[in-house]
Length: 229
Image (cartoon, rainbow, N blue to C red; front, side, top):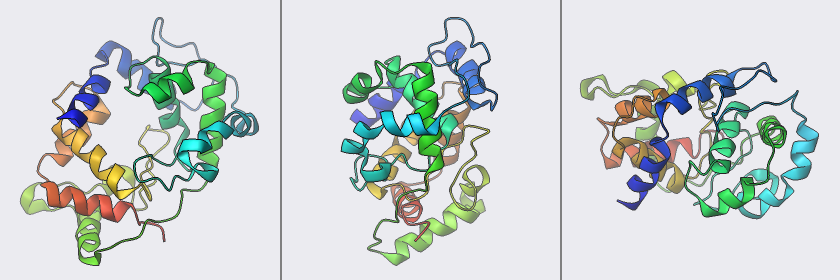
C-alpha cells in the first residue's frame, strides 16, 4: 500500500504539466523556451558533462562510486539517459516526485546544473550485474523480457526498452540494465498497481504489467538486474 501511494503522488502530476514536459525534456535541441509555468520543463545551453561530474560528487554518497549503486534500495545513475535523468531531477526539485532526501539535493540545482548532471550520468556505463541466486527465475524473466507471453497477453519489455535494456533517450524511455533486483521489483509493482492517468509512459507500463503476476515481476526484475555480465 505504501509503495502504491508513493507512486500515485508522482503520477498525479497534472496531465497539462506532464505531457509538454516529456516532449521538452526529450528533445535533443537545448535552449528552447519551455511551456509557461511548467516546473518540469528546463531551459539550458549545451550540457557540460565535466561540470556535471564536478557537482555530482556528493551524489556518490548514496548512489555509489561512479554513480553505480551497490545498494539494493537505491538505483544507480550511471548510464541513465539524459532525458530521463533531467525529468526526474526536475520532478524532485519541484517536489512532484516524493523523496525528502532528493528534494533537498535538487532544491538548489539550476536548469543548467540538471542538464549537466544528466549529460555526465548519460556518458557513463551502467554498473555491474547483480548476483543471481536462481537461474531458473532469471531464465523465465529473460523469456518474458524478450518475447512476452502471447497466451497471457504479456508484451515483451524489449519492444520499448530494447534487447539490451538500454531504453531510448530520444523517447525518454529509461535504461533499466543492471538495476537492483529489489529496487526493480518494487518499481514494477508500483507501475502495475497505479490507476490510469492518461499519461503515456506510466500508462504504457501499467498496461504491459497488468497481466503479470508477482512471480513474473520477480523474474523480470531478476533478469534485468543481470543483463550485462
